[in-house]
Length: 82
Image 1 (cartoon, rainbow, N blue to C red):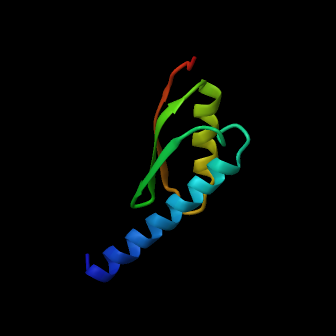
Image 2: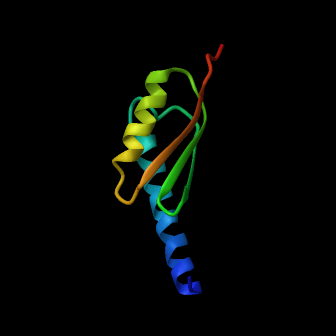
C-alpha cells in the first residue's frame, strides 16, 4: 500500500469517526452517553460505559447506518450508575 493510499484511508476513517460521533450525539437515546469511537479500515469500535442494553443496541444500530461503516465492534459495557 502506498503512502497516498494509507493517507486516503486514514482520512476516510476520520470522516467515518466524525459522522458516527455526530449521529450518536444527535440520537435521543445515545446523546447523553460518553461513547468512544475508533475507526480502522471502515470497522468502527464503540467502547465505554452505558446504563442499559437499550442504549448499547441503539448505539450499534445508529453506527451501522453511517455511510462507510463496514462493521461495528460492540465493546460497550453496561453498568448501572448511581
